[in-house]
Image (cartoon, rainbow, N blue to C red):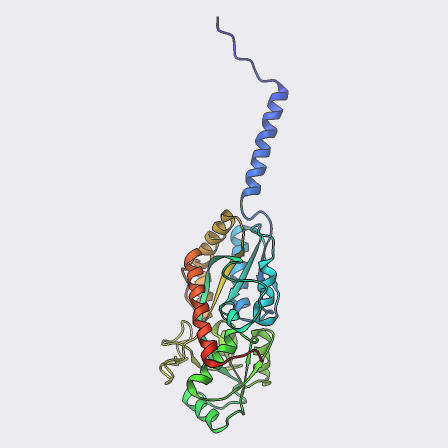
Length: 329
């Protein structure tokens, strides 16, 4: 004899609804991001890292409906902020936006409280822009690289150059320039590219070897003059600025790149979700326009491939440090 299927009681229905609701909450909690995400930028506001971080993560805030917060922690050539980020909770809500400086640091600093290759998970390359030789137009009359070199050689030690700090790409780019051109310019380190640029504009320093991203708006505004980009070709968005190859110093090629890492132990799901969000933002037409205006193209280097690139850069800059004799002033 077939018995009728019993109808669920009200209590069973309520329990089932509660379980479904809890399952929905758990699923929502698992979706990344479900709260604000902190991006540690290891330099003060106004530098090259900021120039790329702020528009990028503003776009991601709009895309994902969650706040991406820039946390500037400047000092010690970007190594202080890197140390802070390395010790952050690996929960997928703190990421580190570093730069070429962090591939230079192992050769410049005898002790670091982090290891960029082992204490972080490589997420991806954000941008790569050539360095640009910029001068204060009121203090330096030269408009071409040959004119600048002529002045430096006739006035050894008279000019100085600002940098984002000891051991940064600005510092090493200057030392490499001096090595290759057999000239002497005094190094003046700052606590970030932003403060150094402000003093360049104000005439407190004569010149800089800066990342094109942070100098771009000041070049276009006429506050500083671009002499040449340290590349074998002209930069996107700056067709009037000659390359160092054109200007007669073909070996002088330096790029400032910016990348994103997560603290070691960050869930793979969060890293993958971040990569997908970055790809979407970087490939939007408006972001491509911003990147072009900052002198760069949209890179495609993710995860382990980005990690391998960083390892190669560490070896390259160690050789530059050794050959130039660069030291922490």
